[in-house]
Image 1 (cartoon, one colour):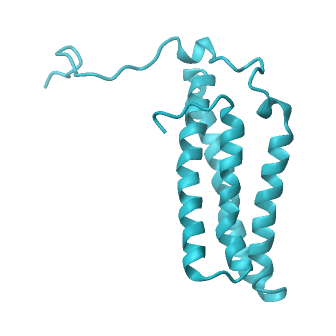
Image 2 (image 1 turned 180 degrees about the vertical axis):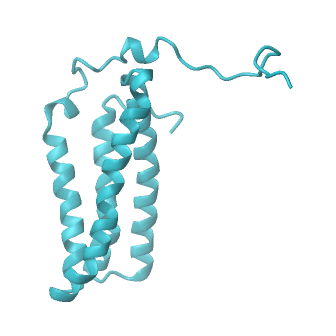
Length: 154
């Protein structure tokens, strides 16, 4: 990811997350185990690419004094529905069919990503916020060797 700078990072992050549906789709069509594993590997790699691009985008466009709050909301939104869905998946599979649950999950992933791609601000690389917010990058945190003034006296 260090060498790739997509011109439209939100489109790239959304497109790469279509791969998240691949392992579930493989299970639905009863694909061979090796192909489900390959799909899971592709989904995992796409997750790493997504996280790199998404986190960079947030850090460039959110003011430093709001970054922790924004990341808290992003994280709670991203991870709160998962445990609920996993808790309900067994009951849904039992009352419908085992194949229907991953089919709904894969379909939801594809539909949700398609809806995100329809948002003009995601597709347009020349949106008003295409340039980094000055307040977010005005005072970057620099890490280096501590000086003697940074070391507390004991």
